[in-house]
Length: 352
Image 1 (cartoon, rainbow, N blue to C red):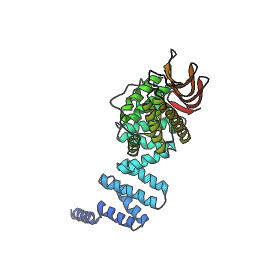
Image 2 (image 1 turned 180 degrees about the vertical axis):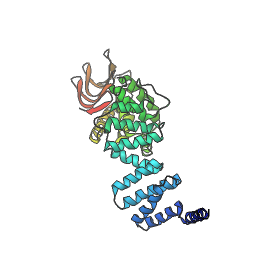
Image 3 (image 1 turned 30 degrees about the vertical axis):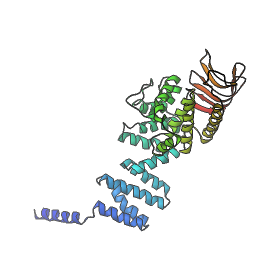
Image 4 (image 1 turned 60 degrees about the vertical axis):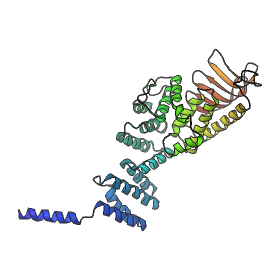
């Protein structure tokens, strides 16, 4: 009994003498400010690895460890610490690590692994599901559309109907799959366009600057912007929608977008659309009378519509033509056929 009491007293004394997590953290911060990064990492790691510590303090410690490794130019250890801070719930760390993954998506296992972890933490937050779909569609080689569909169908089912109120990234990744019939999604360019139309209200009152601000706040996904822009070009004669598509491209390009469309293709697309809009502004094709020179708007029984320069009875020169199957061409026409410009086919953009 005496030994038990003595042991309890000794344990209590030791506990009383043990430094608190808060004091360890403060010593770590002092070492960090003194640029003694090795000591700081050693102290802060005690907090960062202790899951019993209050999570706010643990998040701060993990974020500070990242700063220490960054100061030591140890980028691998720095990014691992940033990831751990993000997974622990540090908001700024999460945003920074997601930015890092979007511009450095490879290896695919790192990209997909992080978003799988975040999706387990917040399965109802669709951005993580959309990023997982993007990883399986555009990062992983070979692509695994069935896995992408597994995450998207909680928000947009395989017929294209929405479940709940999904945001743009989930809708656009599902639209991409609808446009191509991937992962068990129905092949439906029309359904893909309907999903795009459901996203227009998000931008209907936004200027280009607003779009960029939202990009910086991480509320819009760069790949979703490109997919939405492609589907907009394939679905509308409204010059304002074309202008918005141009803003999406510019926003995605400025954001450092590299996955669904390379920078050179985006830049070329921007130049072609700007050229078309400059020509478009010279005339008023909506006027019924008089007809504005050789610019006309017309449709035919085969499901083709056109607006732009004409010669004889068909497209010739700058113009925009769209088919009712989700295919569109913007640029210069020759002999009534596409010549040089942007071809959008089933949600995919290419430069001719």
